[in-house]
Length: 162
Image (cartoon, rainbow, N blue to C red):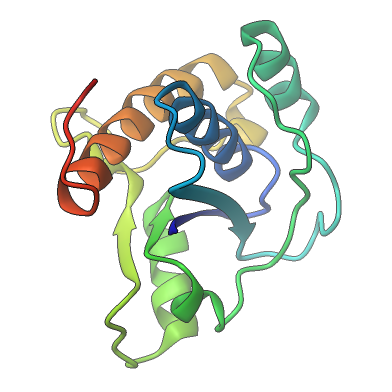
């Protein structure tokens, strides 16, 4: 099973949205038995809580399930448990790399989400907890998750778009 962990600050807006959207795209491709997704945060303010109401409202409107998603902290063991650790902004990436230290892993590939969308003018996925713009975040997340899924299919499953 190929596993992806999306990471943001509080794990209630961006990373759970990415987890839900990615799971939805994986399911649409019929790959849910081969690819799994999760999300976590670098801060502990919202542990155990469901996604932010703005994220839930947007996902509900689009018919994308967020069932079972609850905020949790990223932990050192995640480095050995996930194939892709996708950070929603530069600060999250820095925190994740600091948490994992200098250890190398044959498994985990840490990347910044916006590196999947190099043509975009922003380095980080904006945090809608502060901006309130969940639509903008969804558009980036939807496109970036699609690119990540294509990358995984190409690199790990030797498949291309169906």
